[in-house]
Length: 178
Image (cartoon, rainbow, N blue to C red; front, side, top):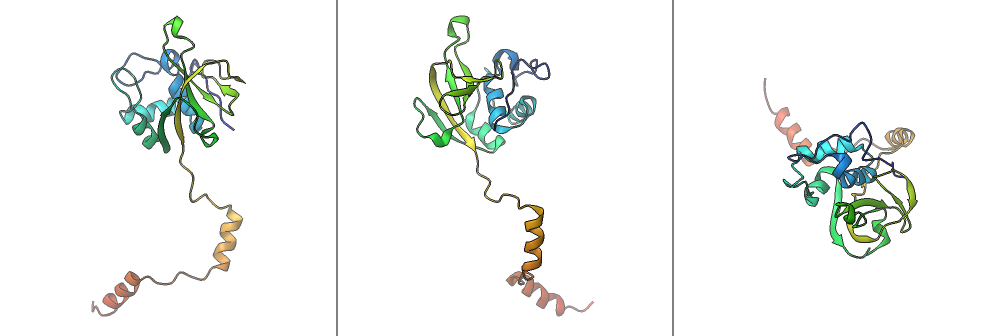
């Protein structure tokens, strides 16, 4: 389940993209969409991206920098969704180009429903999708075990065997005279 965030939220609407006069309220749909995928608030995501110099001087995102900073995998930009494994996915639309905004980003949840940073509502997707940003969280290869599993593992498991370096260190230190 994703957390819906709104780019017009009073807590972060006036924050600026590094090196620009662009605010999250006016041009933050992409950062807010990344926040929805990540789970951290837009101000936190923007702060991380600003510190990492993840934006051009025009406010465009360096996707590979953002992926590294946010622990995502970025597989590029596509005109068609190559696989449902990318859902939820950040989508680009040109829906507001007549109003002076050539692009707008939102999160497509399941192919039909979307989360839109303009209103933070889950709704049927009203937009024509121009492209997909194929970005996703890296899988957690070593998920934390519940405390009861950890405790049982400690009881059931024998102590670790000394490594080669442990044995050498013991030999070296046992021969030393102090």
